Image (cartoon, rainbow, N blue to C red):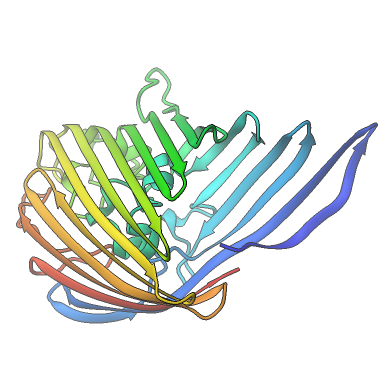
Length: 378
């Protein structure tokens, strides 16, 4: 994304012989359009793109040169719905990102705050969700490739690139007095790039996911607890004590095209039976994806992907296809069609039905959606 600097603090702060230069950049992404769904609770529907299909946002990114190769950095990023102007990410002012840190080309970068995990940044960047966001994500986003959650109170380290390798690590303490592990999150990531090949690994380990990442005010077992997840793909497993996610992905560029392979494994461990989560024990998801894209012309990009997901008692298949036409470097028109088929029993104990993204449940095993949107970056 090309970012346009709208404010430059050009007056250096002078204290003796120390000179610090700082800059702040305003950037953003706006999408609006229409989505057709063939079956939404039993009826066809046409609706506005609701802001979550491609994450409309605006943000501020800043840096200050501290000397000696060290710089201070920050990012504040807001998410909003273009159809009605409302805040997304649970109504947070800066629900997409909010962090401050120190960076060095030699030693890497440390940041503190509300941040993305390696699954989103590394594995999600290779998956179909990087082309079509919510409409291209795996059912329910059980593996967080499309950032269903960001991590609060996170300390994150990103290494410099060494012989093609880049490593990252994240730790977020739970903050519960007398119970250090409650709500604790840690994550690891590794990326390798050589020539046309990019490969990545990611791992998340989340304690008490209902509270720590899914925004429940109550922990499983407390009076009044209800599953905070809205998707039946895994809402019945949200009362798990631990949510583990592993991902591996690789992409290869050739000429004007590229192909990507993605594997994810998600496990919900020690599930507590509650009124809204009728399960115990554990549940596992395995997902296999292949995707590709090709620039027919400099302005016309065509993409396609297929994903097969095997849950504990259900199966989901999803195919995505569509072109993207660039009117300029910042403005493009996006068209994508999505077909999803479900079978088996979902996490709530009911017959699994198709549920593409946030578009609502089908009344049958199959659902089709087509989205046409105009997108602008600034």
